Image (cartoon, rainbow, N blue to C red):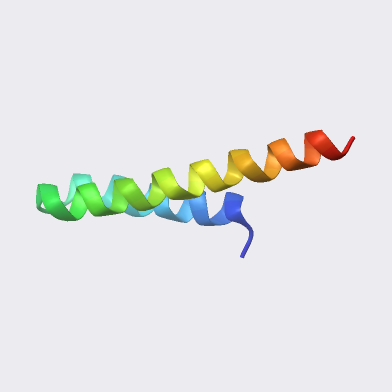
Length: 52
């Protein structure tokens, strides 16, 4: 699965967890995972730009 797809799935999970009133701890964990994917996405794009 590509990183962009992982970001989209995690974002949807986060949105649903918030709508379903999950605990703040669980929402925080999901949010942190999304943050990790975002950082990874930017690193990959920067590496591609550097190669040009």
